[in-house]
Length: 173
Image: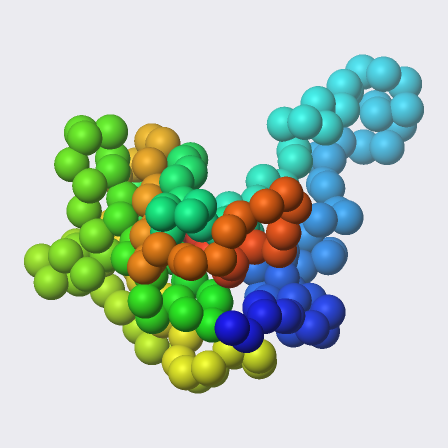
């Protein structure tokens, strides 16, 4: 059984792909003469209202002894929800989403009916094979239930352990 190892540089490379430019994070514009701001005639906006919100997540997947992992994914807007499974055995994962209706739909079924697209890319350092990104039509502001399954493991699960893989998630275009 091969261990899932991602080097620091590989992890940093993936995180930088989803990060906003540093200049956008540090610069906020106030449209008023400096003397008005200094005199208190113009109140600066609440910093929380100006915050940059991440639209990406790094979901650690840890399967139980039956080969099941469940979680929830908050979705902020309609558009595309991108999911990228990263693990040595990611091609054996069955990923399903439930929009609250109680009907689990696998990504394979969504690709077949046209409500999702599968895009293959080059390999990822330390992982065999290609990496596949799934672009799913998002229903809008909602919380989706996530279920990932694979063949049950014969290895016992005891205490703290490394994740079996990760699922990169991006909400938006």
